[in-house]
Amino acid sequence: SFPGIIDVDTSIRDEQVRYRVVVDQEKAALSGVSPYDIAEAMRLALHGMNGTLHTKTGKGHVPILLEYPERDRSNIRDLGNVFVRGTGGRLIPVRSLVHVEKTTTEQPIYRKNLRPVVYVTGNTIGSSKSPVYAAVDLSRKVTSDARSRGVAIHQIFSGYPWSTEGISIRWGGEWQVT
Image (cartoon, rainbow, N blue to C red):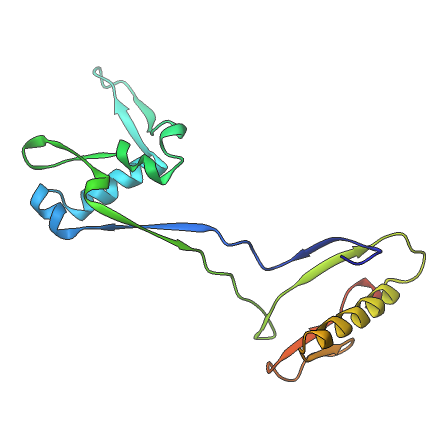
């Protein structure tokens, strides 16, 4: 937090939980259920399915959407509500045929001129001075903070870094036009 700078944001995103549902091939085969059947049941449970209802008289087709209520598809534990038909038409809960792996999503990699970058943005407020002064003040604070942590940072106010070795900060914004 720096005085005079508001609306600070970064291109680094919070980690999101990701669930990977893996079919137990042996259990599925013994139950007479194919991995395709499990995938279709999961697709229906998570996303619904569009279709067409054909009337008895044949005078028209009625579009339909088949889906689980939102309350039954909002949590990974709701796999207990999803069933597939096994041998002999017996209903089998999907959760007994799969195991769930919990991971996190990967961070997107942004690039500028083929080099990896992280964007940090902010706006200045409360000063009649040019935003360049806020950038210079902030660069001094960043340098001081980096030194106290034993980190080497190369800061650039015009041009681009020549190397991806180490950490570089390229300052930019409306003040470059001014």
